[in-house]
Image (tube, rainbow, N blue to C red; front, side, top):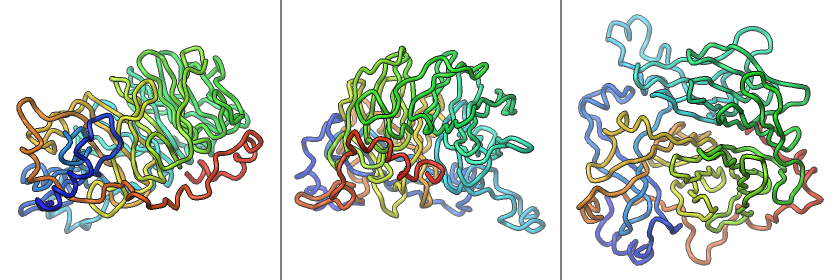
Amino acid sequence: MMSRTNQRRVASKAHALPFGVMGVVSVFVAIVLIGGCTSTPTDRDSDLEILEYSFWPQFPAEPRVQFLTSYRYSSDIETKKSALEDLLYGEDSGVLAINKPYGIEVFKGKIYVCDIRNPGVVVLDLVKQQTRIMTTRGLGGMAQPTDIAVAPDGMKYVADAVRGVVFVFDPKERHVKSFGHKGFKPVGIAVHQGNIYVCDFATQSVLVMDRNDGSIVRTIGGPGAEDGLFIRPLGIDVDDAGYVYVSDVIKCRLQRFDSNGELVSAVGQISDTAGSFVRPKHLAVDTNGIVYVADAAFDNVQMFNEQGQVLMFFGSGGTHLGAMNLPAGVCTNDDDIELFQKYVHPDFKVDQLVFVTNQFGPNKVSVYGVGELREGKTVDDIASMISDIPSGVKDEGETNPLTNDLPAPGPDEATDSVERSDEPSSP
């Protein structure tokens, strides 16, 4: 818990930080388990006492984001085995580790995690408290899933850049078909109405494909450093109105297109300032039109409105609970809030869940809640339980080694950058 001296020190830097301003603090929730095993949610849920919470932005600004919990192993969600099962099979038998997660999606209480070290998608079923692998069988099966999209009807689409295929699974998670063609290198994927939108490293474009037969409906963008074109399109999502958002990991640009594929806006550059990027990965758009972009270099997620204006960020590197370590995937969900209500501060109301994958560290899948203080509550009501951890914001005059001597690619570098990049077969 931060001392009152530290609170006054923080307040001198952050007293003018509303939701739409970038200076924020990272998240930490310390969970104390009373007389139980730390490996399963069953124990955590029954004897849970949360002593510290952390929010963004930093005290004394009103909080908008809270870290809730994280997952690393299948045992984090599964029912604890009996003592007899531990004796017969060993305490660690059957435990599945999430190794190097990338793309992520959440649907009806299930977290779908693309683990590029597993030839399949890890499914964390929070309702049934089960873990399983959604994959294919036989030759030509899944090799390195990098992203997943789930349609409202439960159909699932998994991009595999190594196989050059989009694998299709039905609502019961059975592999039913695959889409692909020669030279195809899908890395990011989204679904909207009757189409899937695929970031293709091979053509440096977004392919809009019919989600029933895989035929190409149209193409968005193409090779180039100018706005409307791509070098390495990676993150993609489509909002309810049909606008397409694409992040480019080399251009460090967030671009927005209309439903016809015409460029609407573009923001971002290689820099360490608010609204800029160094290594942007996947992105997500919530039901309110807020865009979330994970940046593996900054170890954070930036939030933008529909006009491309940066609102704030959350996350920072470190060893504390809730820390980010090479974040890659991000998705949002507002249907399963009740499953995480036990982690929410009683004075805070969550309206949106944000899930973030980290390729390293213990928090392989982290869950955050976006919301606001409950009516009648103030920051003083939660001040005594706020943790003091690294903010992720560099001090005044401090240089950032991530961006020193790192110019944006010029037009003549657009094609060459594809060959120099390590994305995404080694994301």
